[in-house]
Amino acid sequence: MKKILLVGLSLGIFLAGMSNESLASTITLNGTIRDFHSGAGNPGQPWFESAIDGQVVTGLVSSTLNNATKDPVRTAVAAGSMPGSSSFFYNWYNDTAINSSANYAITLNNGGSGNVYSYSNNSFFPIDNQLFGNEGNSHNYHFTYEVHTNFTYTGGESFTFFGDDDLWVYINNQLVIDLGGVHTSASQTVNLNTLSLTLGQTYDFDLFFAERHTSQSNFMMETSIALNQNPVPEPTTMILFGAGLMGLAALGRRVKN
Image (cartoon, rainbow, N blue to C red):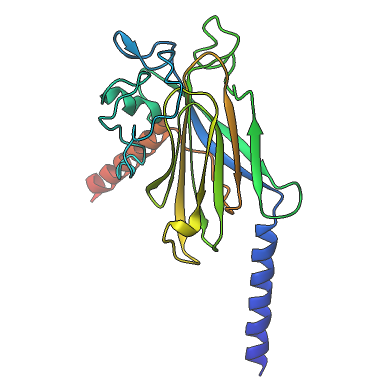
């Protein structure tokens, strides 16, 4: 009888903890911003500060993420602002010689109650006068931003994004929001009940954004997904440094043996 009571008490404490966690007033998501020079891209056809598509262009990236690098894969679909398929796209969401990166966090708020979290910024210029700088403009207009986290599916959740320019969201490695191209603010919503997810299972959530033109930058999201607060991303150089140290340590042990 005591064992049953203890199990029941433990379950109650666990469920209470889960309830309190779901009602947290804020969710902080850490991500990586990469800055680019105006005109960065293919010679003669720059992707940053290039043509204005004027409307959303879908299909610019593949329906699944690259398994190795966990970033979108550029397709052969062309747009005025993104001509043809190009290896240059790899630079958008990987640290390379032509970009400069920094950690940046956004905080979603539910107003202190309820389960709908939102973040809204109609002047989303998080790296003004930083990294490559404003390059003579009023803001630093040429950058990408990515966030990686996960969540446990409970049923009925949705995610809405409103903004410009490119925005892609992947859930469970599948593209669910596709707002590509240089365009005015646009929105799209995904209802997770349509994704054939399993209740109680944990799934990856990956968001990729790009600001590419000197006019405006809107970044707004609203969701009932209880996204997990993620750790600050490790810089690629530190990961490589750590791997090198482990390799040296292993070599030292081998020499001693």
